[in-house]
Image (cartoon, rainbow, N blue to C red; front, side):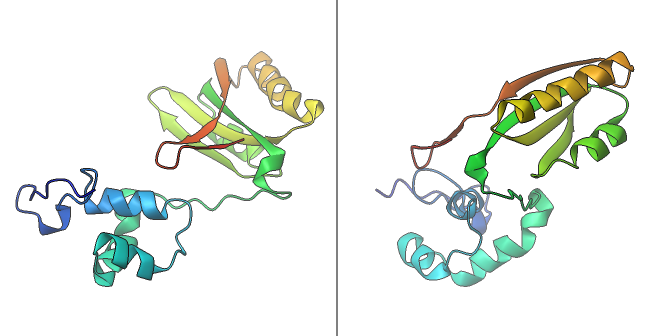
Length: 162
């Protein structure tokens, strides 16, 4: 269902298309899980020219980062943990946990280093990260940390990814 089309502040590329989203946001939701999708179905369904799609793809590093994740035995064999670490030793933490078999993601949020690690399901592997962080805390490389397990739920597709 096509909602009201409006022009935002005279910027032609920000015309609201379907469900009240801007072109860039729409393309993000369409391509977020697979940047290799063919353009033809997107062009037909949303009436977007291919040059607009290519312009958005070429500009993606201006507004986001591309991360290529690696899961040696497939993503479903890993459990995602997110840690918030209070530390002044970012380089040490990043170097240490980048050696895990699957990809890890690190970024700063205020005074915390946020670390997303993908750990194999067996119990010994899952306790490994906590043991290492506890040891780093005893050695005063980490002041404090907390963690959570991530669950995937795509709002756009209403599907669950374990």
